[in-house]
Length: 219
Image (cartoon, rainbow, N blue to C red):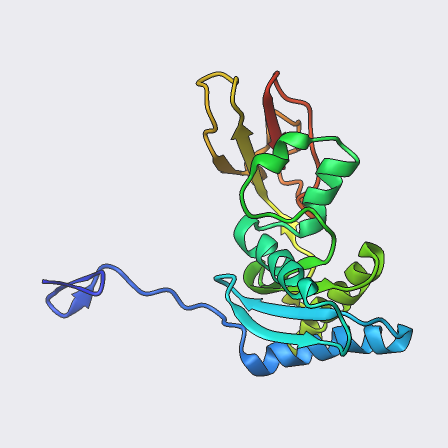
């Protein structure tokens, strides 16, 4: 009889539930405090948002007199690395420095710095988003907050991800026609399209390459 995704036969199960780390409210507050310390040091009024590994709001902190609209921006920043497994700055770099405007057709990512993953053993357990000052300063706070997890768990935890995932979005007019969505592959096997070497991680998921007309590719 199948029960909860496991088939029991003779008292043994052929399928097992996965164990995973979860971002708790207490840890989320601790990371937000680390980001807050940067803000207080420089007298920056900001919004700090923490989300879980599903992108759902876990913790929110807003300074007095900070614009209400910045709450939604900070939340979308935090959801970007959860949904796309790369920091929001990767999308900003793709758009601003590489002029990869087709990326704007993706639903969900916000191409502004300061949405960073919270990682344990290279697995995302949540993310932080900051909004309120310049992108550079927001990124400074988000990095301080995310990296504070290492003080709790040691070097297995960090906030700056190494992206091994290559993703390819096919645009309208490309071979096959229409928006085909996002195809993911393990870049550790090498990337024939962008020339990513075998076993070489893409830095923050922001390295872009040339691709056939009307297509775009990111590793």
